[in-house]
Image (cartoon, rainbow, N blue to C red):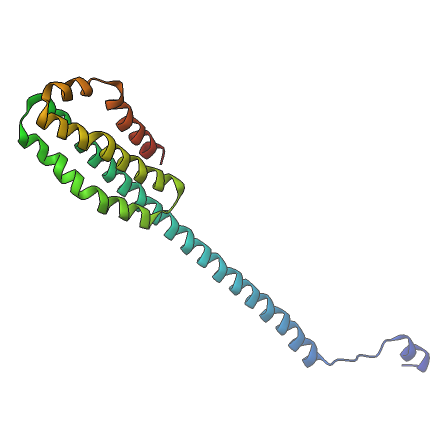
Length: 166
């Protein structure tokens, strides 16, 4: 080679080994970034699955709560109509179970919807169901008259609608 040609060829700063190491480092960096991305995706999927599981459990608890509210209504209604005290057994059981089931729902989901459901059944029990059963014990005719009022079904329907939309 002549000196004129040698001056046109750029000199190599890095040897073949250096270039292979540099290329390998780029591949390793890419693989590490891909691995970190994969770990992040797995973690996000795990969190989403856990959230879905909690939502499913809360929905199941809400359905249990709805069944207990229906037992309150049907037990009180049956007792008021027939004066058969054995029909108060589901009412009494529901009344005892509701606070625990409602607390479980609030632990599973502290959303405003869950809190509203809790407030609604408590209001129904305290302002309608218990007073109506107590009235039936002392004045059955008055209790039957109150049972025919629109409010009797409206409160339970409102609770059921809250749970159904939950």
